[in-house]
Amino acid sequence: MANNKTLGYTLIALIAATTGYLAYQKTDTASAVFVIFATAWILYRFTDYSKIWDFIGYFINPPMLAITALLAGTTYLILKGQTINISIKYGLGTALLATALAMLLYKYWNIGEPH
Image (cartoon, rainbow, N blue to C red; front, side, top):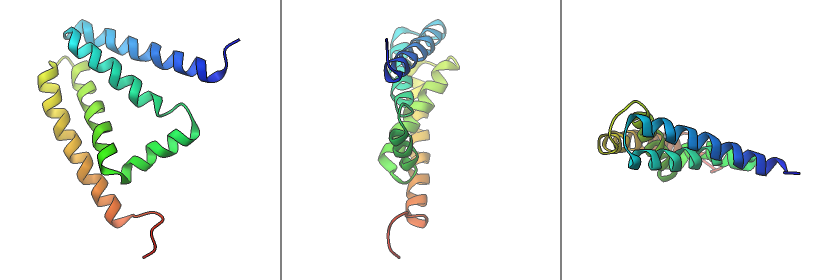
C-alpha cells in the first residue's frame, strides 16, 4: 500500500505530464519539457506543511521568488501558445517584477528582525 507522500508525488507527476502535453499540443517539444519541469518544481513546494511555509517565505527572499516567477510566468505564456523564446523573455520580466516586490517586502516587512 502506498503512503500519502507517494500518492502526492504521483499526482504531481500526473499534473506535470498533463500540462506538458497541453503545451506540446500548442507549441513544440522544448516548451513541453520546460512546462513539465516548471510545473513539477512549483507543485513540489506544496507536498508538506514545512515546504508550504518555505514557499510563503519566498515573498521575502528575492532570488527564490524570481525563480518561481520566471517558471510560473514562462509556463503561463507557453500554455497560452507562445514559443519558448518569447515566453522566457516575458518570464524574465515577470521575474524582475517579482524580485522588486520581494525586495520591497523584505525592506518594510522584515519578519523576525529586531528593529
